[in-house]
Length: 89
Image (cartoon, rainbow, N blue to C red; front, side, top):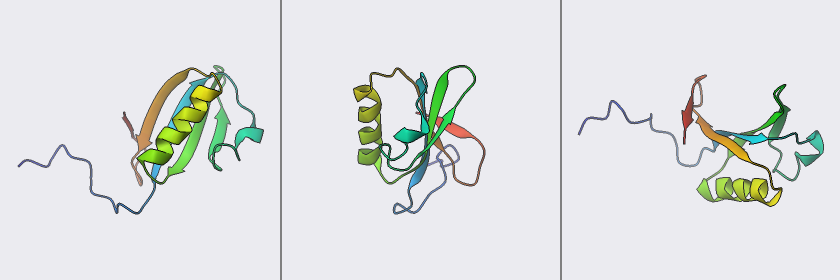
């Protein structure tokens, strides 16, 4: 099997870094509600919620919170640790 297109193996116990972009502005007071993730406001009116996510269940929980706030989801990216590029999911 050709493995050249597969992402590098990571320790399954290491959390992955995700970036969740939503339309609209969230203030820093939402940081605790999003489990301590970083909230960054963009000039175009979008908000980036980013940081380590332990597993897929935790990721779905974060996406549920975005839905519960009624915010439009723009994108979800998994950031390769040690690299500047992101993978679109």
